[in-house]
Length: 269
Image (cartoon, rainbow, N blue to C red; front, side, top):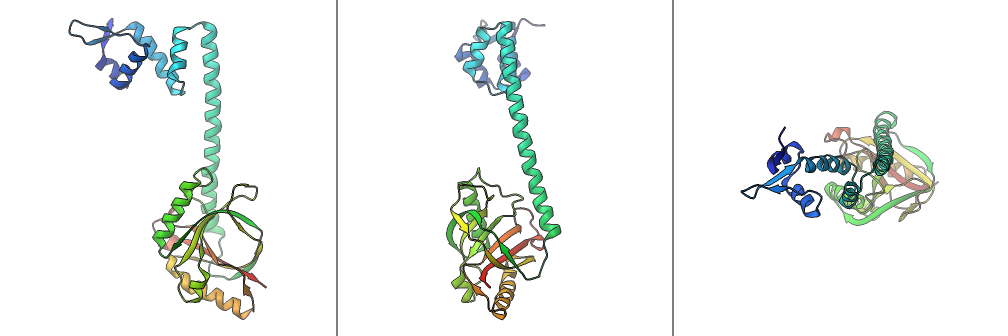
């Protein structure tokens, strides 16, 4: 075993870039010698320090904390540091468990949309009050809807995700629908849990005339007309803008035939 190693050797052994090694030197943690040509030579004293740095950086300990530990090591402080590592590991386990549950919920959402959605059938249901986050924007193309949804998600990134989310949708422009224009929307939204306190849209409890269909968004025209005919035949009154919810969309599949969309029109019956 050699007594000294050059910076290239150390960088390769520890999979650590030269800049990091020079940064640790700048902090005074490492103190390499210089050979006759001025090249850095790392001794065994630097090696054990790098072993500690490599491990402790895995747990995101600050360099200040690591430097203090290296310079003031005792059995007591080592046990304290290891105990702190255990707490950090437990915290990461909890974070990963929450992340796993979130992903499992997304899979459940997709399975539910595929297996329990009744297609091409008009139904009248009462839906309780719903809270949501919305972003306004007059849009008239599917791509614009997707873009606005992404802007909404970015604005409230901690509140909702896109992949496997069956509660994202758009609000139609009712005047446009009445004029025979089926691709104009006033805003996009994401429905939230009922206990959520931070929201900017409240969909009041009401009866909704609904239909779900599979395929391209452009099919909405025929389904909206079916709903309008059903509403007129039953002497219902539309009380606010219709909405559509994307149960499976471009985020989950590139095949339009796999898209599942539900149109909901609030009515007074």
